[in-house]
Image 1 (tube, rainbow, N blue to C red):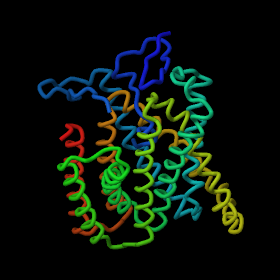
Image 2 (cartoon, rainbow, N blue to C red; image 1 turned 45 degrees about the horizontal axis):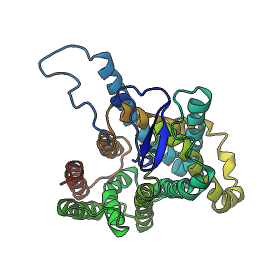
Image 3 (tube, one colour; image 1 turned 180 degrees about the vertical axis):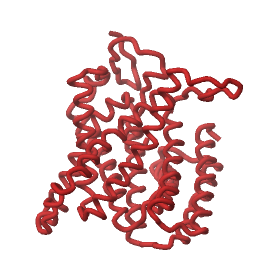
Image 4 (cartoon, rainbow, N blue to C red; image 1 turned 135 degrees about the horizontal axis):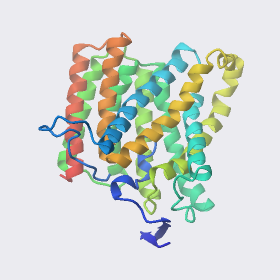
Amino acid sequence: PAGRKRDGVVCHDGPPAPPARHAMSVPLSAVGESSSSAGDDKPLIPATVASPLPPSRLLTATYVAVYLMVGPALILVNKHLLKDVGFGFPMMVSGIGQASSALGSFLALRVLRLQPLTCAKHVTWPFYLRNMVVVGGATAASLCFGNAGYLYLTVSFVQILKAFTPVFVVVMLYATRVETPSPRVALSVGLISAATAIASAGEAHFNMTGVLIMCAAETCEATRLVLTQKLLTNLKFPAMEGLYYMAPICAGWMFGLAAVLEVPRALEKNAFSLVAPNAAAFATAVVLGFAVNIASFLVIQRTSSVMLKLLGTARNAGLVLFSAVFLGEEITPLQGFGYALSLAIFGLYNYYKIKGL
């Protein structure tokens, strides 16, 4: 079959692709959350028509609903394992989800053959080791530090601090000369910093160790995005294929470091004896780890990666409210004001980025 050339690299696509909205190719920066094509901008239900959703839009709404639920569910399950169960080893807990994603994507692509591997001939072992392993290391570090934050901070405060991520991304892109922010983007980033500082000042259970860990997580996330742009610019994978290549690397980094840094302590504390009595919680983490990535993939297919980013922001805000109402976590008025302000400015930041202002 005919291939297409991208900056010197040809990725053979196999059979002709279906319409673009259903066969979206996204960069590896979109894998695992994280991570720009236009989707259908029509309302789910026209304002003047009181009728059931068409099947295609009902399917999109279902995927969005699943995405909004599985991410917070995984966060709460991981926090339960780390804090309530007492299995305080964030590398191993993070590795559970990546291992299940690696297995699931392998079964989907190699066993069930749900879609072809479009760039398999170009992902050689030298390329894999030189580029993708580096990006995978940054991804693994971001996930591990992110989970470690729950050992010291409340769920709600961690979500509030995530609003600060664009600041690290813009600074890192500018420092490495990958991208220079426009004055409007730079201003919005400065305002996000101020709003997050206000929210942090209002935190009733502030912990400096936890805040520094979250800063490390966001620095690693920004590094991941920069490395993706610098090292993988010639390849754009379909999301499931990106997961197939990246999840094993992340799992390898996590369990490899855990073998040195966490397993000896876990053996000393007999922590593995906690697995059997809490098998249901660990099994749930396995399922949700893969479900989060699949849900992201399906939402991007049906809408766009921009919509995924906006839904992720809304999801974090919903988790903050859930933590306050159902988990009894305290959110002070000052903290609530700072977070609401940062969300509003984050929306402005996304608008400037999308429009290129």
